[in-house]
Image (cartoon, rainbow, N blue to C red; front, side, top):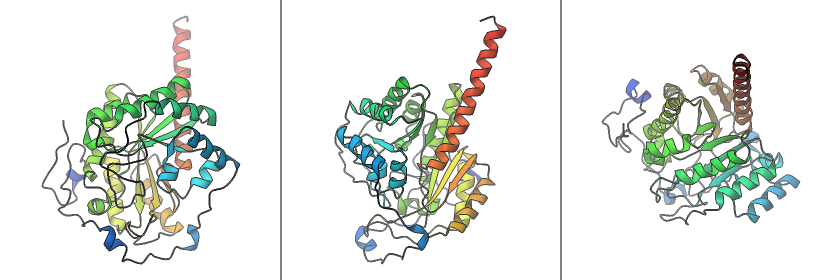
Length: 354
C-alpha cells in the first residue's frame, strides 16, 4: 500500500501509534517553524558543566582525517558537527556519509549545507568508502546520507551499492545504514533492505507536535514510522532478520508525556533500538535549545523507554544516532545470531552426511 499524503487525524490515538502506511497532516496540530532571522534574536542557554566537549586531536584522528581527504569522502561526524568526533575518531571509528555532503532538505536543527540541486553522485564513492573501511579494519561500520529528493530513488541504489561493495570485501562486516525516509517510497526502502545490511536506521528526530517546527516539511512523523515498519515487514517476506533503530533529540520543547507517547509509537512499529541525546544548537540561526537535560534525567528516560520493550536504549547528553554503545550492543547481538546459525548449519550438515 502506498503511503498517503493527508489524513484528518489530530489526536494521539491507536491509529497514530500504528501509522505505518500514512502521513499525518504536516502543519495542522503542530508548532510552526521558526525562521533563522527570528532564531537569531533568541539568546542561547548557558551550557551546563556536564556538556564539556573535548576538541578533536590525536594520532588516529589525524590519520582518519587524512584518509578521508585523500579519497574526497565525507562523514556525518564533521558535516553535522557531532560532539563525539574526537572520541570516535581517536578510537578508529567513523560514520561515512554517502551521496555528497549537500542535502536537499533544510531541517531547522541540522548543520549540513543544503541546496535544491546538490552535486551529482560520485560513481566511484562506493568503492572509495569500501577501501577506506578496509584500511581502517573496521568490524562494524555505519553509513548515512543526506536527503537526495532530486533523485528518482532518493539515492537508494547508490547507498545499496556501497553496502554491497562493503559486504563483498568483508562478508563478516556488520553494516548499519542510517537512511532518509525516501519520501515514503517503499521501493527505495526495499532496495536498501536487499543490499545485505544488518541494521536499518532512520531517525524520528522529535515528538509529533514539533515535527513541522524541527524538520523539513517533506519529512513527517508517520512517514518516518512507515518506512521503518516497511523495512521490517519487507525483510520478513525475504526471510531476513533485520534490526531497526531510531533516535530522538531532547531539548527542543518536548514534554516527558510526549516522549513516552513517541516511545510507544516506535515500539508499536517494531523499532528495536533507540538512542536519546541532547540537542545542541549548531549556530544562532538554528533552533534554540529549550532545555538541557541532566544525566539523571537521561537515565530516567532510558528506564521509561525500556519499559516499552526496546532491545536496547542508549541515553545520555552526548549520545547520537550513531553511538558506540549502541553499536557495541548490536554487534554482540548480530554476531551471536550468526554463531547460532553457523552451528545450526553445521549440525544439519552432519545429519545429512556432509
